Image (cartoon, rainbow, N blue to C red):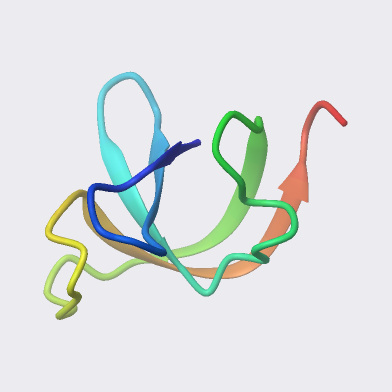
Length: 65
């Protein structure tokens, strides 16, 4: 997890892609955390973050506490 260039934007870096997490639990999806998310990529979604492929999160889980 890493912060986006815009305030409030959180990115998940997979090593091959970068996803902008939409609706992730903000207490779990924080910069530096290892997380597992469930959801759907929404490449056409409009955002103000200007980074990554938008990904609508339905579940957020921390991997390493």
